[in-house]
Amino acid sequence: MNLFEVAHFVPEKPMYEQGLILLPHLATLGFGGIYHALLGPETLEESFPFFGYVWKDRNKMTTILGIHLILLGLGAFLLVFKAVYFGGVYDTWAPGGGDVRKITNLTLSPSVIFSYLLKSPFGGEGWIVSVDDLEDIIGGHVWLGSICILGGIWHILTKPFAWARPNVGSAQGPTGLGKYLMRSPTGEVIFGGETMRFWDLRAPWLEPLRGPNGLDLSRLKKDIQPWQERRSAEYMTHAPLGSLNSVGGVATEINAVNYVSPRSWARAAAAGFEKGIDRDLEPVLFMTPLN
Image (cartoon, rainbow, N blue to C red; front, side):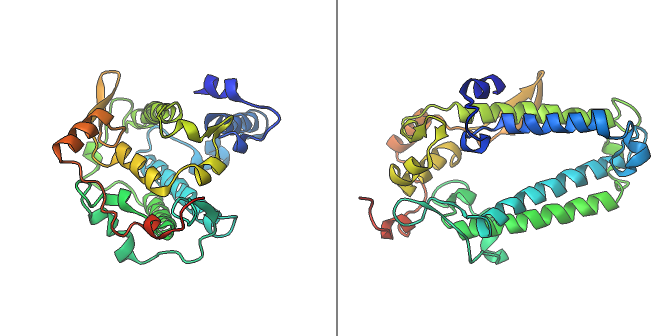
């Protein structure tokens, strides 16, 4: 992934205009390394005990989990702030084939937000893929960010309950903290692979939308209709084929939401099994056609 982005990197243009994913994060890692090597304390335990790790402290596991949850929650709120206050976000359902707009009326009703989770992922309901309203998406991130931050605070302030302690692995040290931390690079391997596969995806509906620096916003607005994007999302997530991810021969998780083989969809459509999402009330049906 790094070599791919370096090969396409244009020094005269900022990274955020080039669709880069990995290089900006490598830069932040470099800044962090310079800080810790030249300016930061030699040991965190002495200056910042909250971020210091003592191998024998089994309670640090919940602290690590809490920190990650809070960071995830803040990331969700970054999208909310961008959509509401800082220029808006791209809305595929906007009239005229999609456009960037600010979100002024968030959907915060729990009955609306959580009703998506109660839908079936099969047939015509579509689970969370059935969302067709950007207000619902941004409002859902408000709920998600709040839950993550509150959960992170809870895990930082509490200790593992008695029923959970016997389940803590003890492969490395008395608390298994090393094994716990080892799973972070495992996750990076999995999600890094998924990111590369998405980045390097070649599909007939996607290639016309690419510019010299990745996906072109103007082409997304002018050369594709919202129903086409919805359809492509269904092909990737709507009726997933189960597969098993493994790292070093050890099964990590069932990869249930992944790219679906078009041949499977073609067979299902020919057999009459593929229903898709009900589009009788699809917003695009009531929008002004593109010129």
